[in-house]
Image (cartoon, rainbow, N blue to C red; front, side):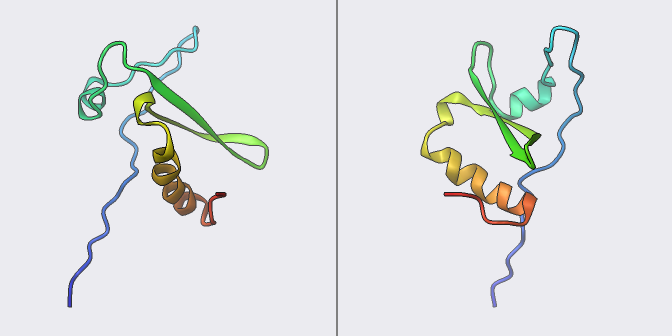
Length: 86
């Protein structure tokens, strides 16, 4: 019998402050692990629940496309305990 280990896909990597201009700084270790370099574009995705944004997801803009649904669908399903819309 094959043992399957569940890998954690989402965790809190950092807590950041929003300054008076609405800017945040991503910690260096997170930028390095995510291979985020100066001038990279990040897509900011707001997820709504009951009419209010409950979480904000960022991903590299060059990874957008069909991958968004594939990547975020299972995460959102897990987070909210329901099927994501197709």
